Image 1 (cartoon, rainbow, N blue to C red):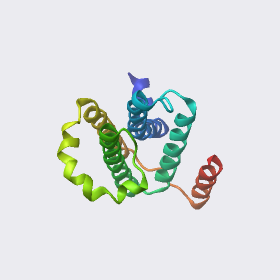
Image 2: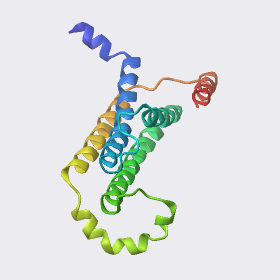
Image 3: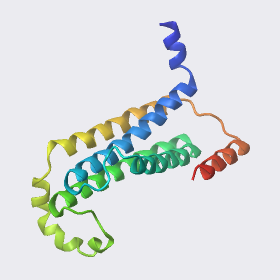
Length: 171
C-alpha cells in the first residue's frame, strides 16, 4: 500500500496518466469513426497502421502543444478541443450515416438545405455513437480532474525551447 501511494504521488506518473487520458479521449472518436465507416466503404480499416500512425501523430502533437500552456489554459483548451472533436465526430457520423460519404468543403455551402433534414438525421442516431461520445467526455472529465490535482512542473525558457524543438523534430 505504501508503494502504491508513493507511485501515485510521483508527478511523472500522474503526468503519464494525464497524457494517456488525453490520448484516449481523442483516439476513441477517431477509431470509432474509421471502424463505423469501414463497414460501408472498405477503404482504410481501423486496424491498419497508416491511419493509426497519422492519428497518433496529430494527437501527440496536440498534447505536446497543450503541455506548453499554463495549467488553467491547458484545461480550458483541452476541454474545448475534446468538445469540438465530439461535435465534429457526431456530425461526420450523421453525415456518413445518411449520405454514405464524408464531409467535403462543398458540403459547407449546402448546410442550409441540410437543416431541413436535421430531425431525420437525429432519428438515425443509435446508442453506440452516444456511448462513444460519453466515454470520450468521461475520459476528459477524469483527465481534467487529474490536471487540476497535479502540481505544475515549473518550466524555464530552456525547458520550453527544448519542448518546442522536440515537437518540431517529431513532425
